[in-house]
Length: 396
Image (cartoon, rainbow, N blue to C red; front, side, top):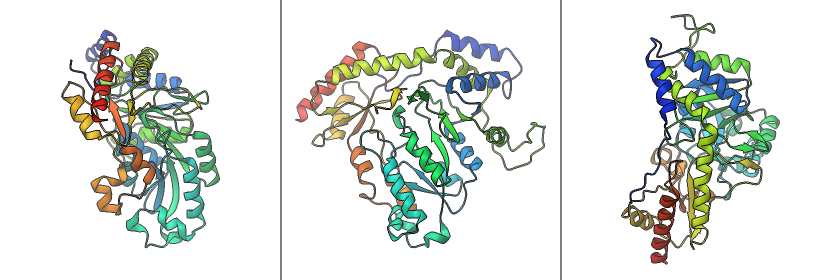
């Protein structure tokens, strides 16, 4: 049996709506974008949603709106896809990685509070929170805390209430990276409605897809207006042809992608429910497998919008061997996520070494993403779990 690691869930409804767009002369900047944005804002519970070409593009524009730039510090998670940190560099700022909670795998708000207290007081311990290559520079002169960029990793909501309190106390912008968390509810509010803005992504392995694409949600009227200009080469607020009032980007979403988004969003409850069912099957079949820890859900989460299914392997298990042996039997897997600060580029630029963020590094050595999408059958999930159990049993 060969199992796919991920798969979009496309039906005739998506095909019909895309064909509807193809029968018109408008393939960009048309009514389907407006329809998608209105429906998405309604789903999240925000005043505005602005569609863009990718989640990465959305995060870049969010940092611009927050006026993040040279000399600014942005606090984020080292346990994420690298785009969440790269966007901070696009803005000319410096990412400050805050170690994670070992259970939620998200930025630890208690550690963030320690970092902010040290940095704003310019105390000597604050130096150790900065990237190693920058620790020789004067704190009070060269660095300004500017924004918090929490990542709702794997669909698990960050602890937003303490993060909101810290953002208010230190006058920092709060930008939610919700690219993996569509549908997640924290304290009876949907993720994406807490910060100054939030960004979602719709790559084919996400809860819903537009092929490529992303969207920014916000309640701030002036930010929404700015996003619409920035995504469209900096055109004026009326969208006047060839009248550009600021530096902008080609970050538009096209009409075909928006049509796919409209159809997928119309099925979002079904899509989320299918993923929840696959998760339940995994939990049932893996609950008796020694050496495997199942993904946890934080108590404040009322609903989990599952992005991937990531287990933790016991320390004595050799993950690479497990991956190789299950792959031989038709089951792909991935080590989600390698720590960002230990990626070659970040080591070279900022001088990071192993041991700098110990919780993240320990967690990252044990995580394994199994095949996960809404089209998996219970028989396929049972096969994955059976093979995994046999491989682990062989190692032990």
